[in-house]
Length: 73
Image (cartoon, rainbow, N blue to C red; front, side):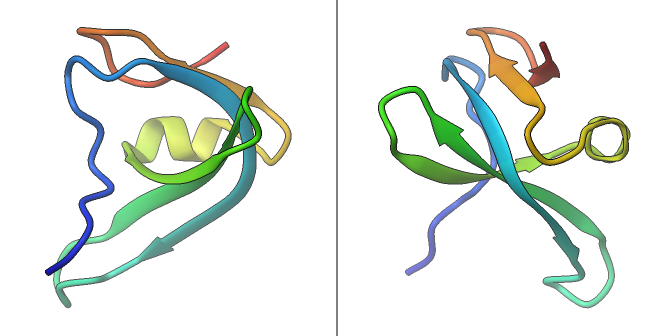
């Protein structure tokens, strides 16, 4: 059993980036992740697109609205 880090279309959250990482989990595709600290103090690891990953830094705020992709706020 595994946990998916892919963002669902109807998910909604906002938080501050605490860590960025990337890796070739399947040996052929590069995946980009950020760890996000939410307003309630919880944290979660989320898979995001390369363009967003390259444009954000630690301590930047990102938001995920229902029906949209995560974006820098």
